[in-house]
Image (cartoon, rainbow, N blue to C red; front, side):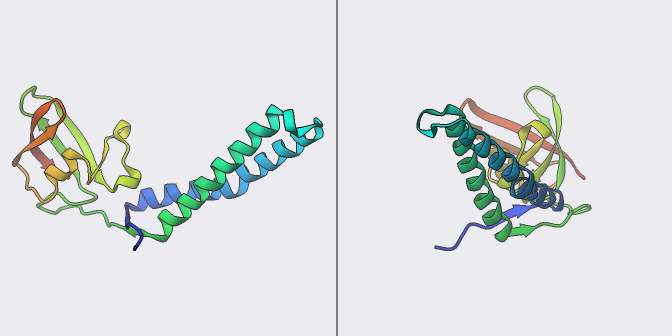
Length: 156
């Protein structure tokens, strides 16, 4: 089975590369030092410091494998400024029709989605609804609480 393509912006690619470098260098060294110190405490069979360090080491090695796989399958999207339709990489201004609130979002791949910074996935309900739509379009988004209505005010 082929591995899933990971869609990233240039910024997202750089962020993953930096995280991988951090884990492979600094974090690995820190954990090796913690394990070494824990072993020096003596009997490792009842040593919680050793167990904690080994668990963190396993997490870090797992994250490194995940990051390497993501980067191996990365497809970088260009900055699509000036397009008439919402595409991956688009910054959009959405207006909630029911409440009048406006919010700016960037449509990104799921690997770099971060709702806290208004980066929403193309696989999210809102992302799916707006992809391929033009400025001025009103979209319906089905969510567990019901149906939301958004108008695409601007594509930047």
